[in-house]
Length: 384
Image (cartoon, rainbow, N blue to C red; front, side, top):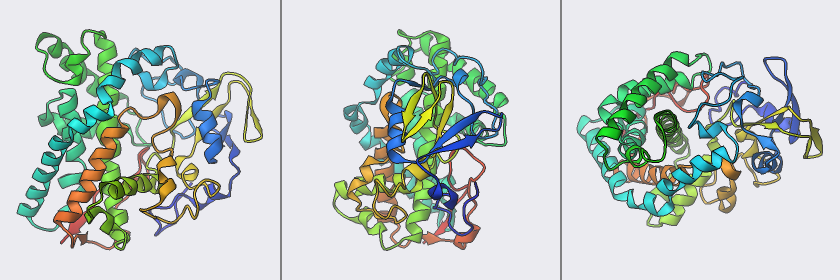
C-alpha cells in the first residue's frame, strides 16, 4: 500500500479501514492474514501456538529471504527460532542487555553524541543529519558493545542498507557480512577483549556466535539510526512539541521517545510474522494451522480502540508506553533499553545544542525509505 503524498509520517489510509484480522493474499499464493488490531497483535505475538520459525511462514511482501525461506534458521539466528532453542540463546544474551548494564553505557553514549555535535558545529551548516549524526552514533555504540572495529563501518552499513531493501535479494550482502563477522569471531577466540562477542566465546560455537553477532550488528544500528533521522524530521515539522527535549525532566524525554516510536512505527512492512501451529481464534476469526499472520505495526500502534486520537503526535501521551514497536512476548526486542537511551540522549542533546535547527530543503524534498523494510529518511539536510 502506498502512503498519501505529503504525509510521510502516516501509514497508508487503507490500513485504518481494515478489521483487526483481515484476509491477505500473499505473493506466493498463500491465503493468510494481516493483523491491524492492537489486541489481536498481542495474542499473535505472545500465544505459544504461533511460531516464528522461518520455514513455517510465508512472506507478505515480494522479498526473497537471503536465509532460505523454506529451511530452518541456521544456529544462532535466534529471532526465527521457537523455545526451547530460542530460550537458550535468549538467556545467554539477556544478561548482556539488562537495564543496569545499559545505564552504565550512558556516559559513553553522551560522549559519542557530544563528539558528533562538536563535529557538526565545526563543519557548519548545512549538513546531512543522517550521515553526520543519526547513523554514526548507534553504529559506533553497537560496534563498541560487540567489539566490532568501527573503522569498518562503511562496509557493514552498506551491506545492511542493501539487506533491508525490498527490491534486493540480500544473498551477497549476507555472505559478505557473515564472512566478515566469522573472521572476527575467530580472532576473538585467540585475542579476546572486553566486549560482548568475546564474552560469549565460551558458550557458543563459531557459527552460532557469528549469526548472533550478525543479528545484533544489523538490528543495533539500522533501527535506531532510522528512528533518529525520521524522528528529527517529525519534530522539525512539529516545532511546538520538541521543547520537551530541551526541558529538565528526563521522564518527559523518555515518554516523548515512546510516543515517537508509536507514531512512526518504522518496521512498516514485512515484519513481524507468525505461523499458526494449530487452529487459533483471534479477534473472532479462526486462523487455521499452517496459516501465516503478518502484523502491521503502523496500524496496530494507531488502533483507536487502544490509543485516543492515534493519528495525533502527543509527546506527553501517557499510554504511549504500551506501543508494540519493540514487539511483545518472548521475542520482544533484546536491545530496547539501549535504543531508548540512544534516542533520549540523541534527540535531547541535538535540540539543546542547536535550538534553531530547521530543514535546509522543503519537507517534500526529503527522500524517504519507502522501498525498505525499515522506514526512515535517506538523508535529512538541516541548517541552523
